[in-house]
Each structure stands twice: as C-alpha cells, then as structure tokens.
Length: 125
Figure 1 (cartoon, helix red, strand yellow):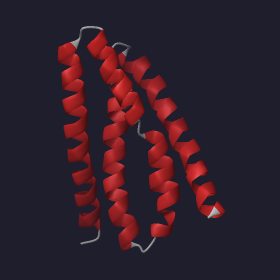
Figure 2: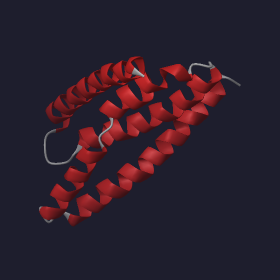
Figure 3: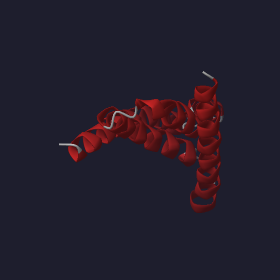
C-alpha cells in the first residue's frame, strides 16, 4: 500500500509540474483572457488516459496505473481549474466564451480519450 501511495505522490508531483509549465507557456504564447492551458491539459490528458489504459492492459503493466494514470495524469489534468475558469468567464459576463469553453472541453476531451484508445489499439493490432 505504501509503495502505491508513493507512486501516486511521485506521479502527482510530475503531473502538476508539467501542468504548471503548460500554464506558463500558454500565457506567454497565447496571452491571458481565455483558459487555453486548462483546455489543453484536459484534452491532452484525456488522450493520454485513453492510450495508457490500452497500453498498460496490453503490456500487462497495470501495476503502473497508480503512477501514470492516478498520479501523473491526475496531477496534470485540472477539473477543478476547469470549473474555476468556466465560472470566472461566466461571472465576467462572457457567457459565450464560457459556454464554448465548457462544451469544447467536454466534447474535445471525450473525442481525445476515444482517439487515444484507438491509436493505442491500432499500435497493437
């Protein structure tokens, strides 16, 4: 149990650090005003989650799931940040961008997880 907890903690630190770097980069490249970084990490994280679930199962490596899926991707993706970003846009009176952000995040993340699974399954076909 303690080994699994340490895997999750290490993965979480790596994922959160990666998310921070994406946030800094997105603001520098795209500017403030729209939560591009949160959208990007949630969509990318969904794709990676889809790919990992297939790869880990195919390679009989589910023992790495706590490190990679719960830890790294749990620390990397940002549902709580997504919620705050959406509400902030809404409270600013930016109902159109808020709606687009919520719908885009959900739809793109679902598409990304399906594509990740398909890509990983294709690699093992």
